[in-house]
Length: 137
Image (cartoon, one colour):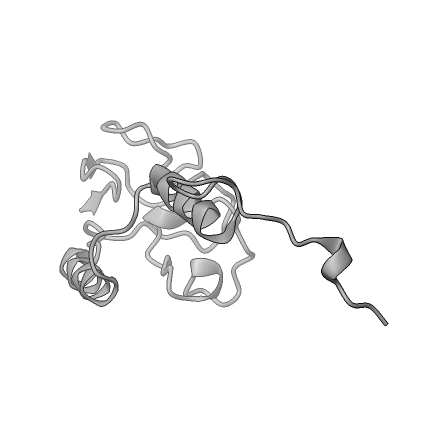
């Protein structure tokens, strides 16, 4: 039994799958790389068939002569626990969650105040050196 890898709807067509066939559940192309038994994103060109010509758009219908519908639903790897663990390690290392995009505005103001990019907090702008006191060659 064939199943659409996008939505899980049972495919009632038999091999060979026509090029213009679409899933009755989600409307996506059935004769596409992601629906093929040779599809493997970990490989070069995402295909186990070494003689197949490269296909750029893996989700769209194509003319691949090696197409064979993959039986069963494609199972995605669960990276959520690994991602959660990595994020927790980063937060522990750098002291908290990532900064917000506008959080740099306050930091910029403190930096300019510290290095003379404007008036010092609670005081006047830094004094400029007098050119007469400079010694030159």
